[in-house]
Image 1 (cartoon, rainbow, N blue to C red):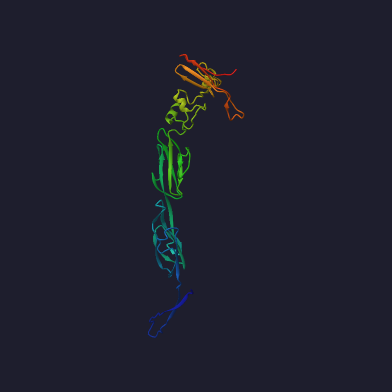
Image 2: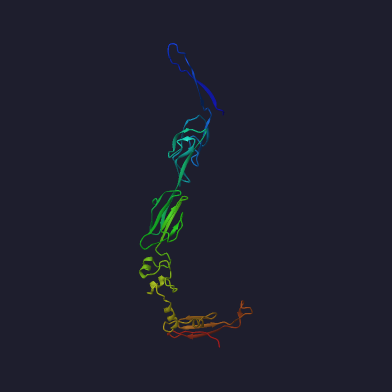
Length: 317
């Protein structure tokens, strides 16, 4: 729209003397009659904005426009919080501020005002086992997006921290966690009184100097619980004792694998009734080692057992 120029006549009169003549001065000025617009923008709160979002016109130069926005909004079942923290713009006075409502004066033909927000996420914190989480916003609270919070996992006596899960990850060494929320989160810190799963509690492991993170501290193929329960040391290699026992079977009443195979019954049927033992043998034959048939009548032996312990075996000549 073109500017229009008006001529304003200002009459200046003064009596200079009885014979003085009257004089008139003319002053020219420019008045801006263009339509001014204000564009309102915001990433959130479209239903709460006044004026509504978009371009609004029919304002005149240096018009005062009242603008407002909701101070906070909840999203996603109340787990995301948007806080209106002020505004900024061009062609408005003031050009920025921290309020959610303001009277702005338009100084540009095309002016803008943008509402500014921050975001917070609802974070819950829980523990598995016995221990606690310190720092941050308590057992549950709002965590600002982009802000780092130092959280500390502390086990109770007899327990060890095993890691974080949920909205953060970290193993046993990450007892101190720099946590930044990027979404609503259920944060879990886990503690265990037997992290190696050998059945021996941490307090017992510590008492004998064993490693609670290793099921077999000394690497002798006997887990810490077995050695603890049987009077052995989980920190001393017990394999020499096993070798000694294996090398002296008679001393410890052991039988070799060959001896055990000798007394295996297989297809022999051995029955004991009272003091009588019966052994029934059946010879079978096969052409393919899969299908077997009887090669004759079974043979049966019967004998009376002595009250003393005896061993029997069947062998072929």
